[in-house]
Image 1 (tube, chains in turn cyan, green):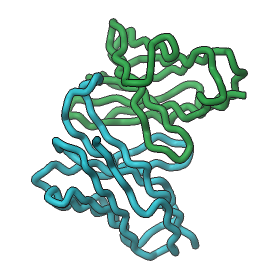
Image 2 (image 1 turned 120 degrees about the horizontal axis):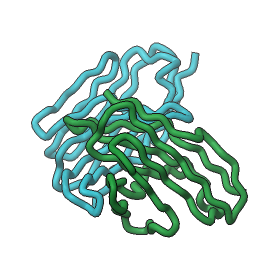
Image 3 (image 1 turned 45 degrees about the vertical axis):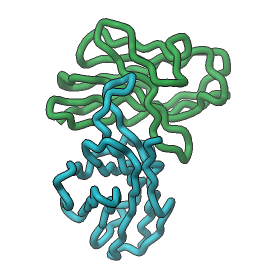
Length: 116
Length: 113
């Protein structure tokens, strides 16, 4: 069964500190992995997308890594800001046609709170 | 990029009634989807909205409960029928643009009493 596991479930850090969120998956085959940021009451917004051949991708203070061999990804946030408080969702695309033809597997997300 | 809007943004409904959620994309997209996100859970795909034909439903979701329309490339509706408290959730519209970037709407927060 395709699964995406994220850890920790929730995290509280002080403003200005760094943090790393983890994503382990068992999805196969693998097409790409995406990290989304979901603010409370809003839809998810894409941060990064990585294919099999990419092992790191940056978007400002966000840096995602991917180890396709161990099926692990991480999202590192540098110099956190209060606006980083959100849920961060790892999504793995198997690229395989399900009933929908677009098979995305969502993690439950890590809830991050940045405090002053 | 594509900007997706949804209406209503939130609603409180009585059990047994139905609610139709509208989704509008500001540019032509190849695929549109409807997701449900229950509290503390990940997103679950309900169905793919197909233009001009019946939606393709995922396991556990049926057309009688969640009728979907997509009359053109940029607009879709999802109806939650005969609602019960278990239908309380966030419903998200999503679209895939050329190049396969997936965008999400802001969601519709539904509470069924």
